[in-house]
Length: 298
Image (tube, rainbow, N blue to C red; front, top):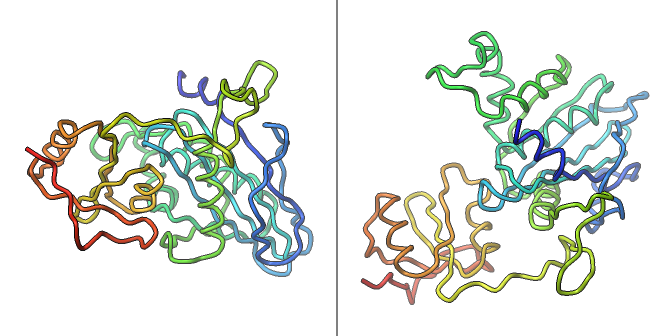
């Protein structure tokens, strides 16, 4: 009940665009003035081709602030985009929310393909859901199913004419990349609303906070991010650099550390030597540095 109440207070939904002509109108992300929007639906009238909906979710910290994005290409060539965010969530919850809103947006369309880069969502809806319901929302290990309320919401909207497909993230698929941009923008820019439903003001400037113009907070000396991908540890000066490496990578681990003591403790918690040499990650090239490796000093 607490998480549901939190979402009602702190979750925001935008309609980013509706009725664009053309197959891929990837315009610069824009946001309407209000933080609330009516539910909408793709016009199902006489579609020429099946409707395709791309979905994606993002979360900073996991758990932490998160966002979701939907990019719908209707059979008649028109495009609808949706996005939203929550202050306290997880990546899986944002992936589920994106799928839920995609189903809601395409209700009434006779043929729909929903394309997600989340194996959690695709396997859940196509393989696990029936067993969970049969077993009273328990996993095979006898534990409660995580995010049960979202799975129930998804199940209520699911239809036989919807095909669920998985795509690999960050391989240049236009619809998937667009959803990723929307989701990450909301994850970065999510803010509390005042009682009137407006974004809270920045204490420094007195202006509404925006995901497109967010002032970074000063980090304590020695603060950095460590990531672990395929057994290789890297360190990052900023969260955006760290996110570029770990976002959408199955099994990736990451955490912010403040100083060498926390870095050594984290490496030990990951089952690695505290004296391991940790490489810098060059975000611009998307690769680890081959020289000048930094070491957590003992």
